[in-house]
Length: 218
Image 1 (cartoon, rainbow, N blue to C red):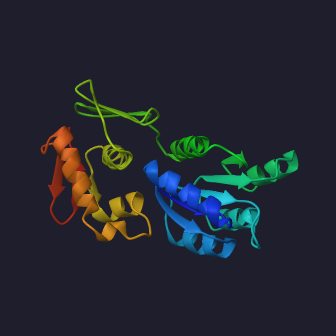
Image 2 (cartoon, rainbow, N blue to C red; image 1 turned 60 degrees about the vertical axis):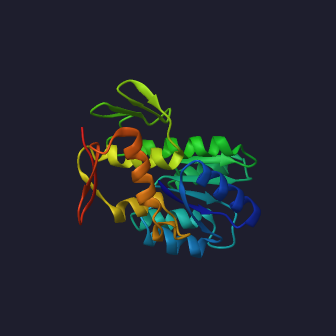
């Protein structure tokens, strides 16, 4: 899942970036509304974390413009202003959730995941592909009923494959969802994660479709 953090406070933006990456998100950053619009209109993000109080255009205006351009990704707004009119303005502008500063980083990650799940066209809390079962709410995986321990990034990759239910997922799609603008995708990291998943679930479960991508089969 690739998300964009829009926050002009450098320290807070860095904290959010580092924490969400540890949670398995691919994270891009924007320091102001103009940069946020440029990035959000140029990339299909799974979600945005959008600060309200920024130099113009502020968070409300950024959200309004994105919705006017047809961008429907979930948006979690952050603000230090807790008055009801401010919260209502954010929700009326098209926000999916609203979090008041200060907040717990774990709560932000949980709300972000929930917003992304709600935005899915056909959400499936539990994905089953043959003997593999993924609980996307609890973030747990089982193989033939036995728990399998995965890192956050391994889980995200397996979930992406499972949601395609036998279809081929291209490397470009994996790069777009799993890696951020740091350039991780330029390395062999994707091959490493595929290798690790094959070790845990068997080579016959994750097939390479040469010239196309990868396929999780039952």
